[in-house]
Length: 282
Image (cartoon, rainbow, N blue to C red; front, side, top):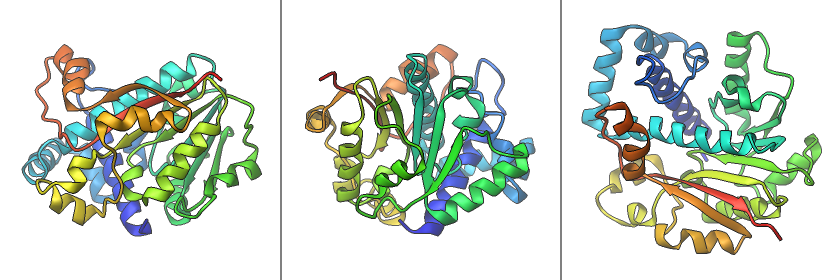
């Protein structure tokens, strides 16, 4: 992964989550009071200023229809999957390619859990500075582990940072797998398959049809997406790693679960999905 590209993507997604936080209660999809506090400069000004905020969203929708809706619905879907796992007394959380993920700082369900954030060193340095600026200091339970997920055996670094392989774990991989090589993604799935029964993997992915088709070829080329999955075959593929697919959510499910109940009209792109898989009981 290119460090600068990943850093820019992380901040862009953080800005969209901060914008969602400006919608009224009962309309917004999630509560994230931290996202806006991590921003500075023009991104922060856009979020704070209503005319700039709405203008930004209109321009974004013209340039990439459904992108905003996809990001905020993805965030809500992953939040829900995480809460469900954590309410089942999962004591460990590992966030791969953590970027500007604020879940360890805003979700009460993560209090008391041990948390590892893994990301490229340059991205992590920026994240730590932003968190320190916003919160004074990160929660003591959060451990930052600099790593390049493209390096073979990269996840073994967790063993050097207090990770307990005998404890159930919530493994989050949001907006990461498309940017990794197929080998690196398979290594991540294999790692998830070594976790103890009752652990959970939550990850977003690009359908293979998007990577191979012509409709989104510009996006694929511009964002350097490398890896995707055949949606109908995903459950079988995860099963080879000892994982059971519990849910596979996309635009249609987002509309039904999150948007229609709020009477909210929001376009959602169909180029990314969220999969939730549990470690099989042996």
